[in-house]
Length: 256
Picture (cartoon, helix red, strand yellow):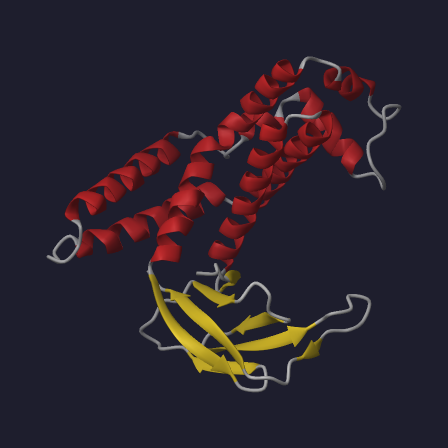
């Protein structure tokens, strides 16, 4: 069976922020594992971008609120006989542990990484147009000459203040993506619209299509309805156009 390609659209600012964090966490993890100085640079940029996000908003508080909200919803499921109680209990325990650990963080997430001199110097130089060259920051050039394992241990230490938030965001989004109602839909002439049930707290809309499809969905979500417009863009130098064909897709509404 061919695995479908999925596009996601958050319906509120909290989930929007969590998806941004998730991408940065994945980017950091990928480039840390690759290990070259080029990869190290992107891993460091990921940490600095995380610092920027956590400075602008209280993501710790938002993660706590969402964990507690999901935990309360899942606890209600314990009364249903058809639920795998062992799996549910394991999930509830993970949530409670992360809630406790987030509560134990004093101040802003990643605060200790703010005081790392090299990270601060890189942040300042990143504000300049173009890349950081060796002549811009000799300390960075020297650090890049250190053995791979030394550089790796430094980066892991700088990322450590974000590890609990990383685990929290991963669990929140994993539960959300699995708390889903999925249906087979058709976009007539490339357009689909659906009214949102007031009793549904939809947080994430997922559109899944065949990976070799010539079209991609542009999702627009409002308070009372959302629409999906399938676009075609075979030549990226030209403006995309709406598909005229009927497009089959899977619609998933994540509602926990």
